[in-house]
Image: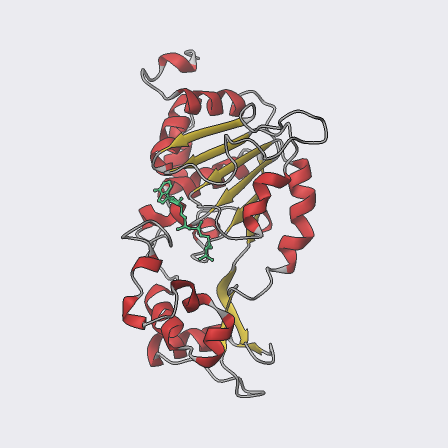
Length: 295
Ligand code: APR
């Protein structure tokens, strides 16, 4: 086959480096960490991009602070802002997986994906064809629901109907408390599956790919710090975030700075554009397009 460098003229060096890693046959246990930025091209706003992010567009709810809409304590007292928002945002057939979601599914198809840790609640990762056992929905999902007071399970479809059609919070049949979908609110712990797998996955990872996240919210934002020090870390994001390309902080015990520069690759831009350029270099474009068209 033609050397990949001759396919496209001005490919950013960072993307070339990622292509070299993925074609080196050394990346068989890739951990992918995604955030709301990978769903923006599916017309789902992210949270913090100034102007378009969800947190800049909640004025009508008169919240004390934007994140209150996903705060457990706030919901127990006043579920209406979340109910209004959920009735508009409830994942349905209105949104399709992006090229970036399909790329993650393609990595799984090629046997290269260890796990996709997604912070998103839009279920587009699974819809893109990423096998369920390869997806960790770190911040929950809308499929099931439970009481915020006694934790009793509540029928997910009934919860959706009441929120989307009646625009009110369902009442728990056991204690009368407010029910909500099982998305993780601030103040709630992450799914057990996350805690069960994150340590072993980050130890096994031979490549970390972070896309579409500000890395502002823990504990998921610690994943880039948990991979081995010789694990390459790729950031495909509009902006530089987290500890990418930065010194790790004060002198380490080894009396030398432990910087990330030697193992980090950062490319600033739209993740779909970056992924498309990467797949062109790898010769994966047809497979990528076929996968995306099939969802
Ligand atoms: N391509 C690449 N990066 C993008 C794109 C895009 N098309 N669109 C947005 N981004 C980047 C933004 O620059 C930002 O750095 O994606 C990031 C999105 O950050 P946030 O809006 O903070 O979303 P996220 O990181 O997923 O938020 C984490 O915060 O409110 C909680 O539970 C919520 O899961 C969410 C968590």
